[in-house]
Image (tube, rainbow, N blue to C red):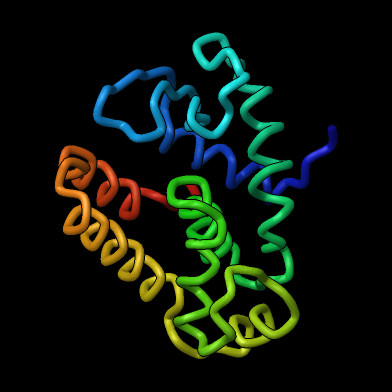
Length: 162
């Protein structure tokens, strides 16, 4: 499969954020490897998942459906893609739609992309702030996830191209 250079740059950051194999009992995703979790892929052998298999999943199940390539700001694309991987693609898209005044439906299209590209706001900074707010709100609703909050905040801060 041929991936674009932008996807490869983004997936490099995402894989660094996600890390390798873990099986933390408090993680609602369950057993996880390269960020691919058993709860979303119950038929996969998560422990033996290869990086190439994970990249294929991220391309087909996250990158392609998110349709981010019409956005002009690559740093914003990275933030949205990383959030989609971590919190779900619809959540990630709804956040940016809310920031630019688009219809908040979780799907990108010409309206959303046009408003993003026309925006003169500092969208990367605003998007990162909304990510932090999302994680804090999540922990307020589900206090048992507090153990992940510091890591999520670090993830927001460290999600950038090398």
